[in-house]
Image (cartoon, rainbow over all chains, first blue to last red; front, side, top):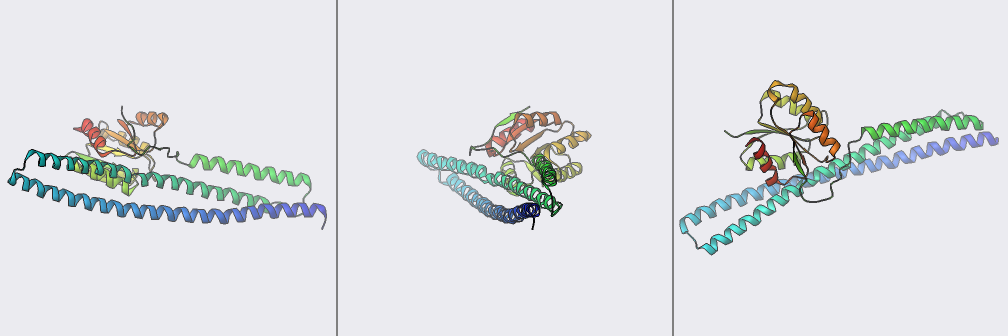
Length: 182
Length: 121
C-alpha cells in the first residue's frame, strides 16, 4: 500500500468512524431525552390530577364548614382562624399552579435539545457522505478539495439547524412572569 | 352569561392550569391544542378573548393572531399572548401582529384573572 493510498484510506476511515460513533451516541441521547420528557409529562399529569382532586375535596369541605358556621355562629377568634386557613390554602393553590407550569418549559427545552441532536446527526451524515465520495487513492489536492466540500456541507447544515430552532427558554425565576398590556 | 375565552396551547398541563384558573374565576373556557386548532375553533364560535401561546406545532401564536385579525369577527376581540418568550423583539412582533398584551410564563392564577378581568370584564 502506497503512502498516498494509506493517507486517503485512513482519512476516509476516520471520517466514517466519527460519523458512525457520533450518530450512535446521539441516537442514545435522543432516546433518553424523549423518555425523560415522557416521564416528566406523566409525572406532572398525575400531580395535576391529584392537585385538582385535592382542590375539589378541600372546596367541598370548605362549603360544609361554611354551612356549619352559618348555623353555629362561632366567635370572632374562630372565624379569624378559618379565614387565615383559607388564605393559606389559596396561597398554596396559586404556588402549585405556577409550579406545575414548569413542565411546559422543561418540555420545550428538551424538545429544543432533541432538535439539536437530530440536526447534529444530519451533520454527521454529511460527514459520512463526504468521506464516501473521496476516492481511495487521492493525492493531497484531492483530499483538500474533499475536505473543503465536507466543511461547506457542515456549515450549511449547522446554519439550517440554528434557524429551525425555537428561541431558548431563559426563565430562571420560580415566580410568575411579567405582564404587559399594549 | 359568562364571558368566553379560547385558550390555545400545545402543552396539556399548561392548558389544564389556564382552564382551572379561569373557570374558577367564572369564565367559560374552550381549549385548542395549537394555532390551527385555535383558528378552526375561532371560526366556529366567537370568543370574548383569545389567550395564546407562541411556540406551537402547525401554526404558531403570531400566525394565529394574524389569521384571526383577517376575520371580520375578530378584528376587535382582545388577544393576549401567554408564552415563555420574553424578548422585546418578540413583544414588538406580537404587537404588530395585533396582540393586545403579553404575559410571560409561568403565570400566577390571580394575576392572570386580574388581567383578563381588566381586558374583558
